Structure formats: C-alpha cells, structure tokens
Length: 91
Image 1 (tube, rainbow, N blue to C red):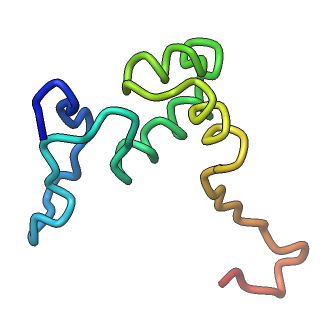
Image 2: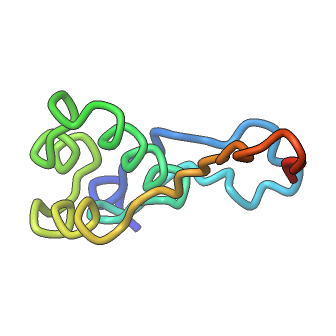
C-alpha cells in the first residue's frame, strides 16, 4: 500500500514474544486491537479531554465510526465484592 494510505501505529504491546501484535503501519480508518483498547481506556478515564472528534483526528478515523466504537464497545470492569460475614472466604 502507499505510505499516504497508512499511518504509524501509536500503541504497541511490550514483551510480545511472537511478534503477533508488533504492527508498524495501519491503514487509515482502521485501528489495531491494542490501539482500540487504548482509545477505549482513554475515553473511559477522561472523556472530556478524549472527545470523539479528537480520537477521530488522532487515529485518522471517520467520526461516525468513532462514535459507534465509543457507544457500542466498553471495557470490562472487575469488581471484587467482599463477603458479608467473616465466616465466608473470598475466592
């Protein structure tokens, strides 16, 4: 592909032994899995600074696709609920 159609990858996984996630160039309008998780995490923690417009511009995405990504995909939250009594042990 032409260099104009690709952009450099903004996020990488450290310690990837097989090189599966070591992507250097990504077509415009697309995200790698690591970038998608980074975008969702940034938006979750500070939605006022990481607006859909800023994300679309930063990652060369269509605004409509960016809004759909932020609306329909969420990161998992792990919540540990403590036991009500001291008799029960937490798993």
